Amino acid sequence: MKYAFYILLIGFLIALSACNRSTKETYFPDGKIQSSLQYQHNQLDGTSSYYYPNGQLQSVYHYENGKINGQSLQYYYDGKVDLDEQFQDGLHHGYSKKYYKSGQLMEEFHYQLDSLHGVYRAYYTESQLRIEGYYFQNQFDSVWSYFDQYGRLVGQGNFIKGQGQLISFFSNGQIKTKTSYKKSQKDGSYLQFNQSGVLIDSFWYKNNELISNNEEIQH
Image 1: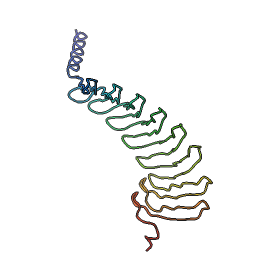
Image 2 (image 1 turned 135 degrees about the horizontal axis):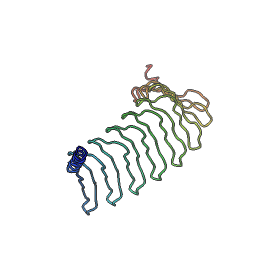
Image 3 (image 1 turned 180 degrees about the vertical axis):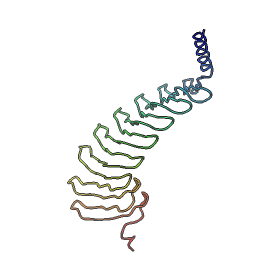
Image 4 (image 1 turned 135 degrees about the vertical axis):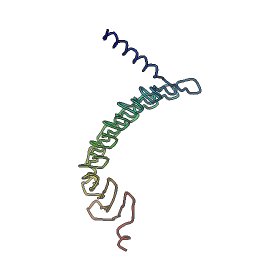
């Protein structure tokens, strides 16, 4: 008897839950579907899909109790993936990948509860590595390396939780610029050199804004 009771109870709960689920759809003026959203208890729960006017899927999100969870995908008009992200309780958490229209990977991030945290890479359209660096809770951290399309190092930064210096190079290896950073923004001196290594100009930044060149500050 107890077994039969539990079977009936489970069946009742499933039926009750199904009664509280609904799908709402919207349409373009020509009758094509524009969106299809799943709800439970009047909040988003399940799959939410959005479409382009040509009928191609534009984006797909998965909700649990009103919050995005798991993988979300955004697409270009032709159906290729534009953005592939992971969420947890409505926050970016895990990988995030941005693609060129060609389908090649453009950028890849890693998040920890909505903060950039971990490796970051950016690529040229032909898949060559353009930038490689690391974030620590939204701040530049460790070594950041910048490459041209031939794989040559053209810049390198060293940071500790957003503070450090970024150096760029001429093709002959000589230093081109030196830029000071605080809180992952230009803050402090910005020095320019010629290809012989001679300092030719200097400026001063505060909170990513150009204040003046050093000569004007001194006067």
